Image 1 (tube, helix red, strand yellow):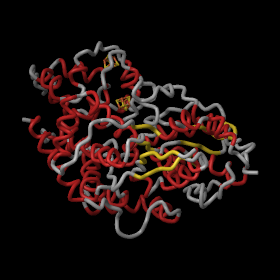
Image 2 (image 1 turned 90 degrees about the horizontal axis):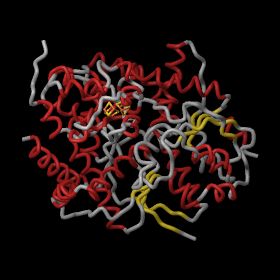
Image 3 (image 1 turned 120 degrees about the vertical axis):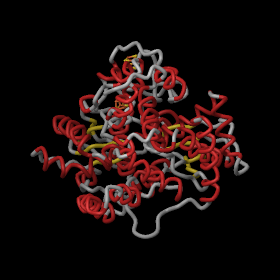
Image 4 (image 1 turned 135 degrees about the horizontal axis):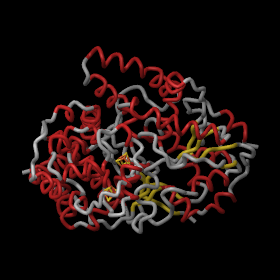
Length: 194
Length: 299
Ligand code: SF4
Ligand code: SF4
């Protein structure tokens, strides 16, 4: 059963990236119509935005729409009201993860994002080997192993063509500086979340 | 004429997109443009960074790079990677246009005694090739035209969306009918064939994490490649290239197709046509699907 939370729309307009612009949505459907993943979404962006307005908080935050956006920016350049649809969806995804919604925290995207952020923030660089390994094994040992094996031919191909190096990861020299900047940024971000 | 630019190569330049970096530097050298790499640059956060972090930490990644670039000199920042360009440009525009973001980003940078005021211009390398170098100049350097080679120019998404047609983005291309890539291909002496999937999306990082959702997107693009009669696909985007290369075997298995199209960067075609070394300069031995047909075309 879905509950109606009439403060939800206001919260989204005020707290989600691009939320203020989302209030201008005129429900034309251009975004949903130009979305390459539209067919795989529980609801297209247009419908999802309608549901935000209606206060269907749980349904919105549990929907797979938030995880099926491939960041192609078709919607962003086509929306007649300049709603930054992609940013709104991703930021709603962040809200769903922060709310601890299992469909969100266990999504492929959240797993991948955590693996990716580990590499980007700790090393200062995306190491494609580490990101994929952390991602695969976030599903547990046996599934992770299966995923890694399935991807082995590609990895070997990349090594053979010198597009994946063997040995220590590339890193920023001044990792301490990066860490301090990111910690401060996270602190400011948390100030907003309050 | 020599000209230096602040260069942000991005993480793929040390991994799966290494041959974009190599061939691009070779091409730019012909026009006296040298890239000064941003000192100790870090990852831009790509399109997934913010899901668990929120907006500001990701913006801070780009801000650290921009601060380092500004400290090195006032020259434009250029990136060859669609996602790196998008994130860096986006953060730069936020710093320029949103006083609150500017203050918060500088508060984060201030934790290590740094700051950045938004003074630099952030550009995609392809815009630099179109505007500062020019297609005619590209043609003038060709010594070994790739005559007869039929190429499908696949721009993908983020190289042109959402900024190519905005004022801050340089207003250098349209979103749906970009012509720059075909111009580069034709400049090399090859033939850019009419190709309907020019700005279709490969699935980006979702293709890496959840291929079940996106294989069909890539298959649809490959169908158009086949219909176009092209022998090879050329793209400016490192993620497009790797996604299309690595998923062809899986697509063939699932859909009963027989795709085996080499995928190369536009800069590899240009470096080869400029008479440079097919391997050392153009990196044409680095495809997961061998690009011998490209190398053989240079005469
Ligand atoms: S394209 Fe814009 S105005 Fe139209 S439904 Fe989508 S968000 Fe609303
Ligand atoms: S950016 Fe996301 S929501 Fe927008 S059209 Fe592309 S996939 Fe769909």
